[in-house]
Image 1: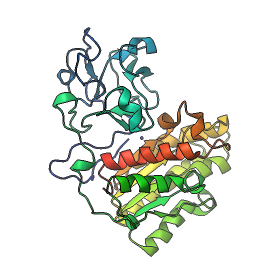
Image 2 (image 1 turned 30 degrees about the horizontal axis):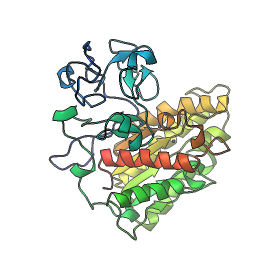
Image 3 (image 1 turned 120 degrees about the vertical axis):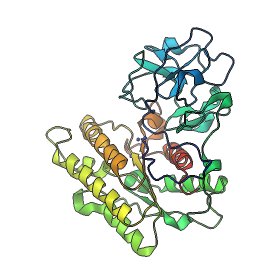
Length: 355
């Protein structure tokens, strides 16, 4: 069910700026940090950047965002709402090697959570950001990407398809919440709906008959699919067993291959965009180990797919929010469905999907 973005075929107007910033921050530059006040009276904190001089005198451009390095939360005390996130943690790029062990950042589940930074900051894949993630433009002098830079009206509601297992299908609230966000943004006309083929059974990637592929095939028979939004792999990891929860476990490997094949089929059918959710952490340690083994494999398949694929890691969205999970500890509560929908819609806006 998690966040990197394949931007190879995202559709933009000539003035369009920005792609989806999901699981990892782009490793643009790691600069030194000034010793003046934390924001210098400017709005650079947590804006996207491509060079240190884009961040003012007090901040540095560390791994694509204006911030300061840190090794503990106390190092971030002067920055509004910030905590220290170490390199390799969820939402922080494991390939980013800065001057410190981590960066000061602000976690969020919705845009309103970023008001502590400024009214211009928005929630991107669980962290507050401002400016343009593609060109590193941020702060007072930068211009923001997002829905205003997108082509509008290219995709009808009926061409947007939700697929997956019980994380989506248990209540179908996630789909309804994304529809509502799209209507509020003017991207989904009144009377139009997204299609939701997710099911409570026969919903694995590889086990028990490739259920998610079957959902997709039924939908394609009914009407064109332009955008596919899905999760997958949870049922495989829940029902399958491994001696060890590693990438060479057949249950894990087969699910990853099935994801690759699904992306290839979608590309062949002319699907223009995929949004793939990966689940929050499971409480059961054995299930969590299998999930942890599958996550990077599906993420890599998403990144390598010939169809543009946005990967959302839901761990940063759900962390420290026990109320986001239902009593079964696996599926989202009403609040969790709402937070998941907000993460999906933010990804769709940033990648100009069905706007």
